[in-house]
Length: 300
DNA sequence: AGCGGTCAAGTTGAT
DNA sequence: ATCAACTTGACCGCT
Image (cartoon, rainbow, N blue to C red; front, side, top):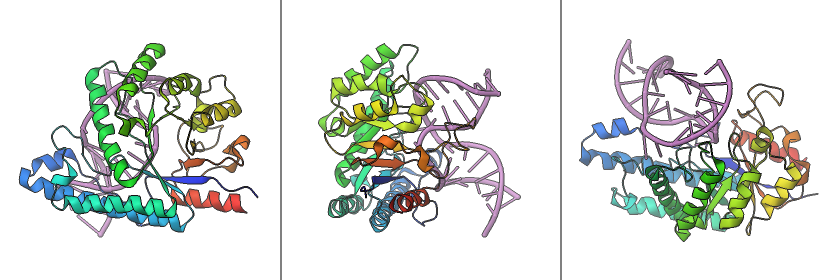
């Protein structure tokens, strides 16, 4: 019997009453400045407690990894509404809860990751976009430090009609990042611009590992087989490798290949992954139900 | 209480 | 030209 993968649950729960709260900049900025901090503190406190609950759920259900929503600290880097957690009322208590999340992960061998969203683009030729992206990475790396998350996973960003030049800019920006960010940074192949073959040279030039998303690779192939991409991705990791898995909504004959289904079709697990000691983040809309179903399937 | 329009940010490709 | 999709629905304001 092969040990199961460490599966990762992404950001949210389908049925479990564990929620992460947000607000909108429009709403917050309509409030008096003195009132905003209280609103933000309540949201951050709620989210810190929810993270601890999410980690406890993962431990209790054999889920070894949890991906953290980029908006765990809502509007953290917003140009007008942004803030430092320590300046919020009860801010040090909020930070303490995040640190207890980190201790909980150490104690129970849980892994946490971040996946900054689509606005974070390090390959842009617009310095403002890169600067705002780095500011977001600074924020996520701060939380990652509290909770001992070892991954901040990014896509390559835009191509702007010239992948080679865009990737040169990407390498340059990665080399300029602080160790706190760069030591956690990973790159993931996407399903419309950058393939594993595009990103592997960047990984080799910067020491940043490749998060191999086999679904994206199937949507946007590059001449590498799944076996080759798997092997070359594995070789970029000096800690436990992280891969992504999902199934297309309506199956591989559907027209919406890029959309994710509620569950994972076990046939979509590459045969060459069997027996690997890896983390597999499960990108499926049924969230914890999908991970539990996979665990049941693989242990049967 | 329920529901619909909206939400900070970038880029691509379908329509 | 507009707009959905992307790692993810949840919030807010109205009835």
